[in-house]
Length: 278
Ligand SMILES: [Zn+2]
Image (tube, rainbow, N blue to C red; front, side, top):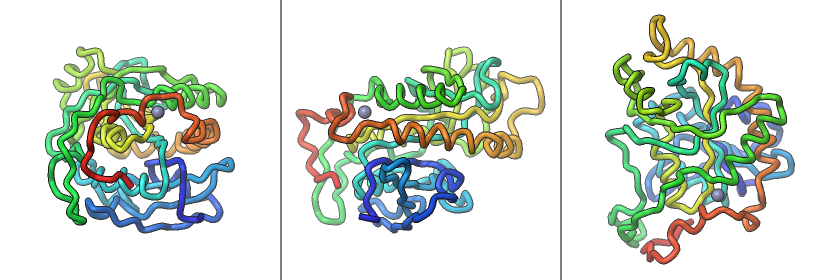
């Protein structure tokens, strides 16, 4: 079906705009509207739903993205594995612009975001989610991570295997003091959208893999003027084609949903969720 997909990619239009036969699908959710329509097409014989994280024309700042609607919408059209490319700042001098990091850990420093489906609030259909405590010790899909790393390697782009992404509230960039602190903690990259995207994916039993493209050295790791948005856009633009190629190779290599060996779908074994997942 033209409106169904098995793999989701949360990223900008640079990833799907040139695909032929893309079907735009509006997906309402009990949590309101996602950032935009889903754009469903085919990559390497796999059905993929693309969702522009910030909406068309980058309308939504990181703290106003409806993360719950985004993940719910993806699952609603059949998605079970999600790749989340994003732009980040490097917290180490050796992670300069153009570095690709596939993190294995996450630190949440956001402040205002709803980060669970299981808050006891009734859904519009009257069902009420129970309070559920989700296992999140390893926030990313181990299978998806290895596939992303191999895909990058296959295109001679040696990605950094592992590391911690600290997610800040934004939309401002960090001060030098914050940035030095993040670096001193041993964290690798800083972003604004990685949380609660990953945890909400886990709550829906979806595999989630982050692919973080370093667009700048964060304020504490460089000695110039600090991060500027113009510079971020320039570096992202320079690397988007390469990232798209690696992303599509990863899409092709992901296992079929029912052939996954990871535990992502078992996050709620033993829990009564109180609601039906889409
Ligand atoms: Zn998984």
